[in-house]
Image (cartoon, rainbow over all chains, first blue to last red; front, side):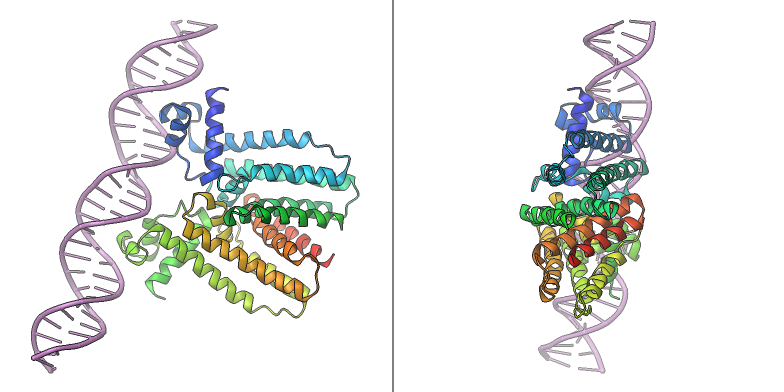
Length: 178
Length: 178
DNA sequence: CAATACCTACCAACTGATAGGTAGATGCAG
DNA sequence: CTGCATCTACCTATCAGTTGGTAGGTATTG
């Protein structure tokens, strides 16, 4: 793993834990064993780092989406939920884009653009899946599922109660079955 | 309005915009026209301020919930959504508890407890409403609606697109009708 | 030789928080 | 009614620590 990747790895962990604002170049430097000035060598400014972070996160997520078999609707939805479920580690991390999205108003525009793209990618993947399986209101339902999973993660994280996320996910999927 | 209230007002605006971590005592002091040391007089520490902030937000929200007529299901749900809709001002603010919830992992425990209570209050109100109207899976659906609205706010805010929130809200309500 | 990937050293700005002072209102004993 | 004490709500000044970012040096590699 290159130093650049190690920095991104450390940054992702920190942002998903305490937020973008609360993550500092010095923290990252300590995490990966170099000096903060050297972090600036790889990512000149904080917005640069933030953009790279979300871009990488979205790419990795896209790869996992592509691995989901879309033939069976229910199985595909479960797999989709599974990706979000994996992102939720109580007391440790939630989805990077839930954090970035909640902070969006105070964030640099290049970071927001990438976060927006992440949500759009998820919605598009779901919409295609639902449409292929003849589900009505595919676009609205796709938006609902993404929103519910992101929101469910936040509520569950606050309450330190995984069951809330699972209930939300189940209810969201039930909406599709209709 | 007392100075304490003016500070809470200013703090709420800032936190809902840029997050709890990014709000400083000096910003608030400037906002209300006193010095930062005087803000500490009213709220000794930042966790104290955070707790008071979420408590007040939840109380005000509770008052609005109590004003909703629960006789007609659809009308009550629309009114509920309306409260969230009002909290979303693109490029300016989202729900205070969406922000606090997303930052929860790095936040003081007393603040998290209040945020958790806010979500629970909303869920309980919805669950009662749904149960009264004989809706199945009332608890899970209540959690779904809260999660979807909070998440929908975040996605819409990131995308600067109100329509996403409205679609999510509509789809969530359609789930109840089932 | 020059690019890469680090380093030391530094900067101004900002952070939450504290110590200690003060003007004005309130309370209450003589 | 007077006079002293206390309380409220601010103030100035300051602190140590942290922040993003820069300038300029250095060792290693192709």
